Length: 329
Image (cartoon, rainbow, N blue to C red):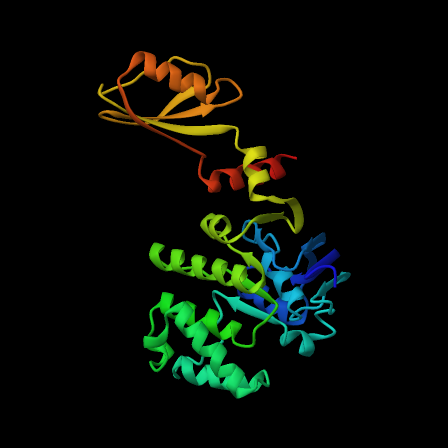
């Protein structure tokens, strides 16, 4: 098996009713309503190597979740082909279920009124796990994800962050080769997001699991994945490593100067002030016009420099720039 996931010209269309507003429109729709075809996924192609961690990002309605559902065997495609762990998802769905794990941020596989331990026991039987093997894997995952104190509490009593850690453990109990994460950190606070990102990445590195992650949060992309597939309007816009993404689309830097002087002015091409406080000035630098070294040299000549930081702009700005480029083309 050359790839963990292989997608070729995958397409999914839906027919949507165009109902007119008001009660008359509702009555008319009972008899007949015009329909229009909507293309959710439009001839996308990509491959993912075994052990890769890939972010699948795009705006609302881009086709991310539809693609995940086709790759996990929930939806049939309208055309095209795909192989996941060497299997056709919508044909070999039952066999594939033993080899993949899924975590949907807005859908739970835990029984709401039961403790997670009961769901784990049920899943061991659903996946035909040898009990001794299951118990060892469960105990290791419980320890790694720090959920020992939550196992015997009903899911309804858990916080969102606690529940999501239990959801991830539930998806890993049968030791899947490939894990699909669809918005796994949605609604979580900063601390819970950071914990889950670290756990998912470390687990993938340790076991060699392939990860395909969809998210609107670029922090998920940066901290978990090494490669990004950007999808927009059902089509793949960009497929590149994070390093390539930065080097291609980041032509600006953020430089923050801490100085003895309350204010700093630098009259250089492509250098603009984006934040100012006493003794602290933040500049945005267009490196095509002025290199960072020239900015630092000018600061040393004109100020008493105490400290400086050089940063890339937030990843959100990079992804937004890619979307704008797609919409303009």
